[in-house]
Image (tube, rainbow, N blue to C red; front, side, top):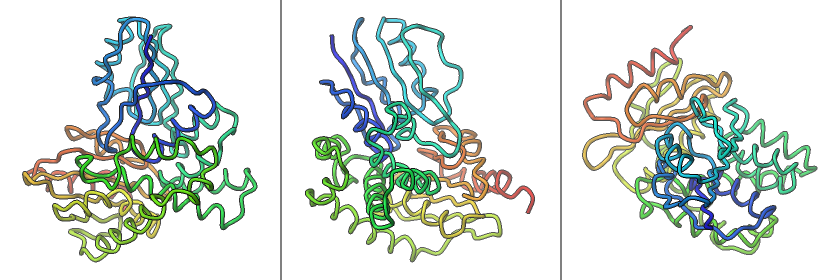
Length: 321
């Protein structure tokens, strides 16, 4: 019997799996990729009697592959905070899904484990731009401001590393990053011992400075749309840049687009932090779009649909303005 761990390559997916395997060690085949590579379950060659743990990717986006595995007799445990749709009624599925705006997958795993490895959940919450959740968990854990700041830097840097169209865009492959932090039950030990933690932070700040120098395509009372060029640094930083804009202007929505080689766009959307709603609604109205109420994305927006996207952005986030 084989086991497979399937997880998003961002901070939330990596930290969620790490907490779970610290508590429940298990030899597994890892299946992961860049943050936007969410249709991962179809790659799993599971057979009847095998088991599967899935973390931080939408059930709805993987529905067909999951239903086939469940019907084949594969047992699946699912942790996630994205839109899921209706879940199959089967004894082969155990689902821990909560799509409310203040949780991420690592927080769900933290709840499941009763806070056993909470520092990793705090790092993941910072990485997912859930600052209120992260700060509250840090207070509960008795962390001081300096420790909380270290976990924020770590979470945001791991999250930054996941953005890109291909693994070659990233500074380190997600499965390699997971294997590097795997020996560390305490994230502060990882920060102190592993040079990659500092390198990710330095590169993140450098890429962010490049993005901040770009003039927005649209800047209105209710939000902004920024288009970054077709370059590895732009693909790496688009999510972190969206989070930075959201934190700087919490009453406004923000969309960060990066140009693809074929002229299309990859899109990251952040709803206003002051009223997190609508990001998933906007992105799911376009092919390849998905996410959650506060943050969502579109894998490939056709170039001739840019105006349509801007109009939809205004419709969703311009209400009341």
